[in-house]
Image: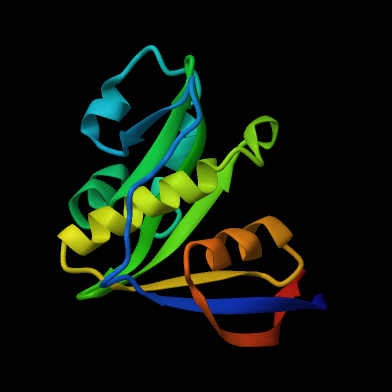
Length: 160
């Protein structure tokens, strides 16, 4: 067994009062993560989305019933997604990813903005974001979306 340190940053956002209008570059389409997306047989990599949907929910159906998200489609591929996690009352956290070939185009900010807008419509406004301190892209996205740093610390995990 080995113990590994991980510096993490914990952010919070009170989304009330913000302006949440997603903007995408040409050639990209924003789509909700919903049953229609999952039924779209033209998408080549839905497994990337469904893997995240079940990362903290027991099934895709449980995600669809209790969580929400948005993704960005480019051609036949999903190239970015942002989904709510650990939803409870007026709170949730966000999980987010962008395919490497499509990074630095504002896609994470667009999906994050869309999810925050959807969260507010559902009465969810207290939103968390946790990332490794050395994940510069995640730190930059959280801060660009208006999240405020609450905790910058080290956690320890055991791997065997």
